[in-house]
Image (cartoon, rainbow, N blue to C red; front, top):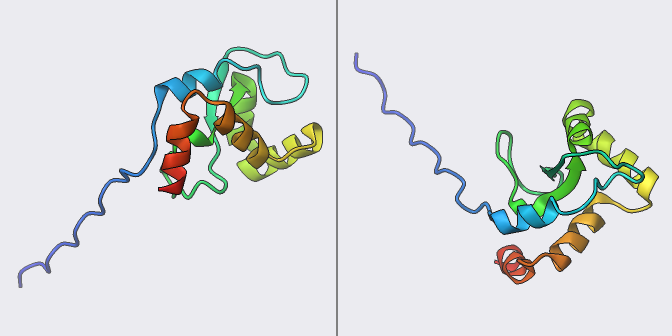
Amino acid sequence: MPLPPRLPKKAKRSSRWRSQAHLNFIRSFHCAVPGCQGMPIEAAHVRNGSGAGMGEKPSDHFAVPLCRDHHSQQHTIGEVTFWENYATASGQTVDRLIDELRRASPKAREIREAING
């Protein structure tokens, strides 16, 4: 008996907004964790609220500046816990931080267009 037909592969996610210029802008800040002076700074992508699925990286406008140690901690303890701790320490949510970075970005217009589609 022959094998049944194969299922079609899902299309790769092409809607992810990418910008090296925006990521360089993110890396130009100190670590977002209050009082941290750690280096080097990395553009840490935030999955919460990004719409990215498992194994998918969020669009670059969901990136925030974290030092290498805090970026590692974000992945180790989990995003929900990490960003709850951030909100307690900073008095603002990660969503607000992302919004402020988007507005200040040299790619702000492109980000608005990507979000508003």
